[in-house]
Image 1 (cartoon, rainbow, N blue to C red):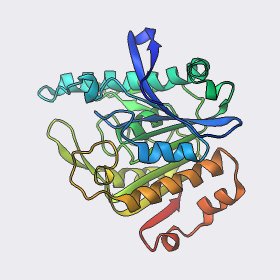
Image 2 (cartoon, rainbow, N blue to C red):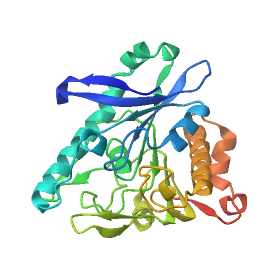
Image 3 (tube, rainbow, N blue to C red):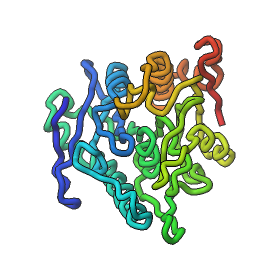
Length: 294
């Protein structure tokens, strides 16, 4: 369901949300999905609608940094850009928590969901900068690049963390981003997963940050690496103006694997858990992907 808005009085804004949900009965786990920098909530339907078709409600906010809302990054002044992005990061964090606080209202907005949103089964999810947003509400601390201080969220209601591309080497990322994340996690990335970051638009190797950072994990962290998959899956997610061709196979692998992960840790599906921990991803995908557990 598109074109919904939540009245976020604290931030003096109307928060746009898109909601995908299954045509089933019974209680439903809830995924709150945070989009990549500059994108918007409806640019990930290959994932969000797929999750909904497998029994999950997916709430997709459009954050303040979306170009669809007129946001322009201040790239000409490094200090101003850092201040701007710290504000963006903070409002993104607040969006995620505000959505959970608003589940009663969302049930009123969509009669099909009345008394069905399961508050005990909440998942933080995101892509790229949205992955950093999801991490921030899952225990990670961010670094203020202007003074080196750490900033964190008191949010503790999410039970699993699902990331489509990790946040890479963003200046805001701490040296050990996983130290505070103590819930089951899946990171899906690819061998061509790079993105331009910073005022100089330098290439950031997203695929290297997470494996090196998983040495001190306190919960099962699964790492899905898809051969030749890039940051935007050839324009299937986040941005449609990037070079193709569309990477449909990579999307299929990532989407299916994410549902197995969710079923394992949110729905307590024993077969899904066995698949996540002991399955042979290389064999299942004809060597197109690997799945490791840290």
